[in-house]
Image 1: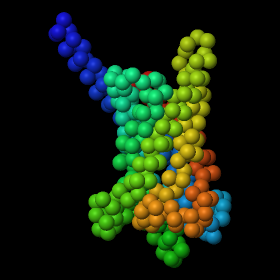
Image 2: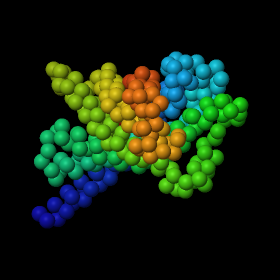
Image 3: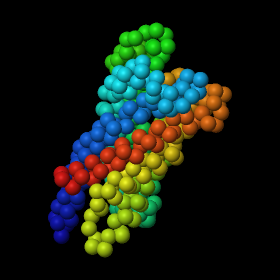
Image 4: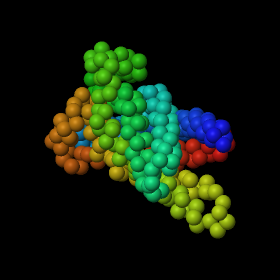
Length: 297
């Protein structure tokens, strides 16, 4: 009997390791695909967040300026290499940490299904923030650098490696984590909104099936899109602070004061419209790709 229990325990450990590997692979692919869809919208969002209303009165004015002066690839996709890598790593961390935490709670804690989702979502977001901060720091600098170069009459675009090197020279390794507090707040609360919305809506739509079949494609897409909307709508002010912290080298409170001084409360929501537009298809793609790959592998 003791031998049997040891064998069962070892098999469970192997299953956990296999599941973690699957989550890493599937999450990485899903994250890269979603980032490719959302990146042009993200460029506009960051520029709206970091520039005042005089530069870009509306989202459309930002889009027109970027296209006219920089084109599509250089303007909207500037610096995409770092975010593609970051999105792969982020989603790998998100799905691995979320599922591992959920399995731990299921085994060791007496919590409801909703409590399990909330706790696991917060934990996954907190873990992902450590990966995201340096990636988004470089991304934000590249997205804003083209604009600053144009305003200064410089046509040469900024590259990823020189930007990383400059940060390291000026602020050391820890300079890559400028804005970590903003990212931690955003991702912890955002992780709750993201996973909870997806799981609740997916399970609700699935419960409407009379034959007990798996979720349909449209249900996964709608659930993923809704999760993206919930995430971005709930944490957008924190995302604005994070962008200002990383592009202006400011602390959290100093960034908040700067936004308030320049644009008031509305300043915390500049770029929200374009963000919600990009969130629906990008997050639908992330969850659908992840779910599809999980069934195949």
